[in-house]
Image 1 (cartoon, rainbow, N blue to C red):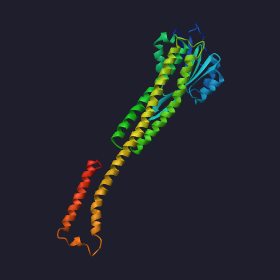
Image 2: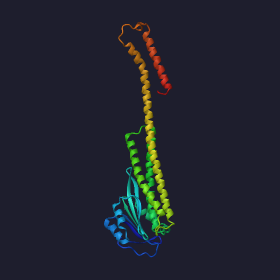
Image 3: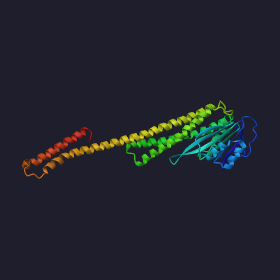
Image 4: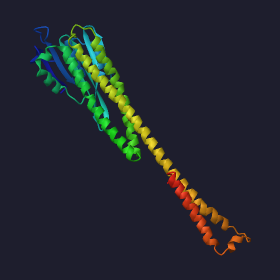
Length: 321
């Protein structure tokens, strides 16, 4: 069912259900209709267009559902597009919520959004004094609801990155962990592409001059803008942490490889001593006087032992071993 809810609100309270084919009469200026649609058919959206005089270009954008966040003004109506986001199998999945806002109506059209507005509507209906502000407060509430869904995504990714960072300090990162870091980096870059326009939407609503945008509600849009900027800052910091994890992992790996190289070089130098001496005595020369010495073998073995021990002690002193 694509029509989630369609209610007429009077004095901040739900007065009656409405249909898509007819607009109920407004008893006073503060009355408005809030219609929530989820992936509507073209026929349903065209019906709403005819009833509430929606602009054709805005309706086409709402049907395509492949728009970046934006605010368009069509006469005395607003068309606002926001991008929703949620984690699904460690991947950020995006949806789209389009909102048609007029003096007496708010029509939200959701595509691919995992979070329904049912709880939001119930929360607002429980506070009639807030709904009395009218359509501008409902617009703010929907935007705030969408932006609040961003924070758990960043916090979840942050926890995963910190865990990988801890593992990088303990041992080498394996191929799977490195690939995961690159995947998280790509997800954050795409997320930033959404956060930038979302901030522009909120900023524009703060400064936009429309008859149904009350000056008393504009600080609420400013608050949503602050939330977006906070998430943007967290994402930027998280990208820096990702970069530092790569750098730390690379430095630690280089350090470990350097230690192994020094150890191999040390043992090679120690083994070079008996190899060189044994090589000399392995030459087939007839006239080698020391071959006939009574204690020559023990002297040579002693020299080898002293030299190897000296080299070992030196390398231990220089911390190569």
